[in-house]
Amino acid sequence: MIDRRTFSKTLGTGAAAVSLAGLPGLPTASAATTSGNTTGLGARTSFPRLKQVGAGVLDVGYAESGPAHGPVVICLHGWPYDIHSFVDVAPLLAAQGYRVIVPYLRGHGTTRFLSDRTVRNAQQSAVALDIVALMDALRIEKAVLAGFDWGSRTADIIAALWPERCKALVSVSGYLVTNLAANLDPLPAQAEHTWWYQYYFATERGRKAMEDSAHRRELTRLVWETVSPTWDFDDATFDRAATAFENPDYADIVIHNYRWRLGLADGERRYDGIEKRLAARPVITVPTITLDPERDPFTAPGNGSSYRDRFTGAYDHRTLAGIGHNVPQEAPTAFAQAVVDVDHF
Image (cartoon, rainbow, N blue to C red):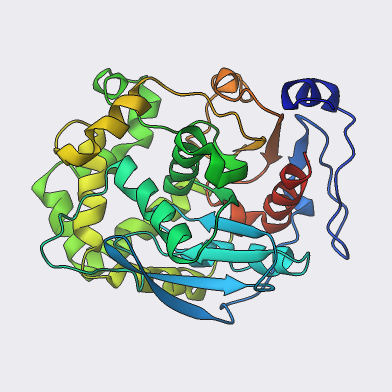
């Protein structure tokens, strides 16, 4: 039997991908640059089913597509987005027999805290444990995890610390586990400029902007336009996602997340052990495909080289030409193809 490390070496640039039936052809060679013109952008506007389930400290709202007993894929959104980032990905995967679960993260959409006394904490370990609790509540032993932005970080953490729960991983922008110590150091000027809203949220003016509906909509839409410069989304697409930002805990969760990353807000002591493990930058051993969107201002230079050593199992890296930050909604076929491919490593 070929072990995963050997397999990732033999995969090479000529590896055959498992094609999505009935979809446009998609170049999927290892380390390929995939054109945004072959992404199969769809026109779906809603999910067929929305559900709620108690999981840990939350009542989690989630969309579900596909056969109830199919292999599970959990798709995780980022900020400032919601489950509709996967509105075109989910039916593609469901058509291949996958059970697709797309949860609202804490503070988003119909996900609610079960108790008013629970700290509105958005540190990375708390968000990751939400998804583990969701899997427990839905009796999902193991799933393919696929995400971007906060979703990539969450999936990376689960894959690194609880690999028995992660069959395989699709991670946009690679290894995004937050290193609090490293975050104290300044970045190059252009990178600092890109993160402008992070510093805005460190101020009380930034908090007030998140709490005010009009300012929140204006700010989040500006982020969409800035980080996805080639995505020609319409008002209805943004409005659909922005509904999720009306969650009563949204401002607290967003502000805490970015302040915590900068060391300006405390986490909870009960997560200290997990954060200590994450500070050691644990490697990810499960089969992984990383996706770098070419037009995303957060994409690190080097075509994935900056995080390659964090993935020690079967591995492939793909750059998506002409695509910005919201990869699953801008390039749904490429994203879905990565899920299918990594599941067959």
